[in-house]
Image 1 (cartoon, rainbow, N blue to C red):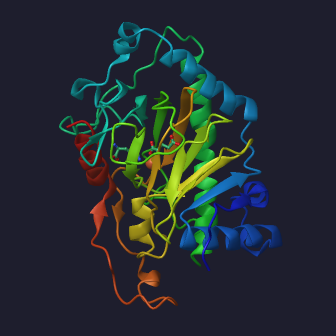
Image 2: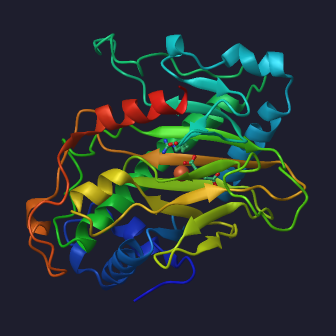
Length: 328
Ligand SMILES: N=C(N)NCCCC[C@H](N)C(=O)O
Ligand SMILES: O=C(O)CCC(=O)C(=O)O
Ligand SMILES: [Fe+2]
């Protein structure tokens, strides 16, 4: 089965039953689980509706993003990202690099904060940086984080069932204490052309990449189409915003845990519109110290994969390598 567009999944039944002992037998949950399985096997991307996150909260987070990016450069640089801040904070246009190409976006990056006892040589140890010039920014984003961590956990329960595992497969040492990431990203318009001929050039808001962890939830401006995904047929397709939904995609650690059954999917951003675009991806990730390796029950599965196709990695090592690469 091949998808030529991104499927929409109403996860309402899963959200209502999550954590219940009998959830795996609930017919509504089972229908959601089947759709998650197909989307993860064949596309790596899906929209979710029925997630229970307030549309007003999602919109307010985008609004404070717009407000922040409209500030002067010197105000934005007051929360500038550096190695001293653990790579948390504001990065200027072109500062983030993907496979050697500077990206045409500016952003603020947040990571879960470490306990004071964390190893000081870990380059990601540092304080998150909040803009005080946009007073509602911090409380809104913190509310949003709480809600999104809950949604990430719920969808991971659905994915655990989709794989034929117990619902708590990704709890505990795997992803019970997720090293979440949140980015508030601004993409200026790159050109007024109606097509993009050279997708390696300067006009790309974020060059093609896969995400690092388990699940990404993209909250994006309505009425601007800029995100593209590469289908299994190697065709780039646009992912239009749909009101009230998140665009969800799977990350590299799910590829490893599922022994390649659910593969992370290449995507990129080209804001070839005349409006400034804001998106806020929330990344639900494994625990920082999680050891990620193909699940034993997926090493000889129905698709005929024999043995482990991927070497084990520690998630924290993977994300550190990625972040250091992004900022030279
Ligand atoms: N936390 C995540 N997944 N961030 C994705 C950013 C993708 C662009 C980055 N320069 C890169 O090359 O990865
Ligand atoms: O802006 C978007 O729609 C997606 C951004 C993205 O892919 C990322 O930050 O990993
Ligand atoms: Fe991404």
